[in-house]
Image (cartoon, rainbow, N blue to C red; front, side, top):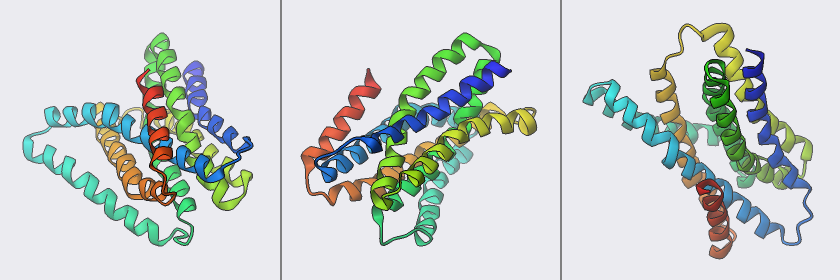
Length: 238
């Protein structure tokens, strides 16, 4: 049990490694922000398309009848779009870069909670498989941390706030494991986890297209955007 909690905590806190990029001395800040956002966008979209959505959607289609399955698969992204529209009204719309950082934080909190549950449960039943899963999660949590810390830092000029947002997103993975162990270990099912994973996949894609992409296009340099996306593809496909 303790080993499972430790691995889950390490997997989550690896998000904070992305915060270290705020200490880099950058000559061209606009270029760095654009590439960083494109990189984060590539990571979020690729993880969703390659891992989150296909497996969870397949499970939903097998688990439920066609009408219920299609209802879940269609209603989820529509609901997410409407919720993000409401959230946008309560976030500083005069600072679009800050908004991107906040929405990335919300997205990753929701992403990391079920990820923490999966990491904890996997390690609890098979510690060798849990180690492999933890390493894989750490690898993609680092660029996700960049996607939070860079826009927050450069929009607020506060490393403290950038670290806080990144830490909250990272620690949510451990909180997910803690919650399931204390309260929901008898209620969490593979069906609930797959539905939640599908919702998170949709959320990450919608945020990437609706928020991050328009922000990167403001820098009017398609080469910078392409570089960020290519780097994310190379890292995640290796």
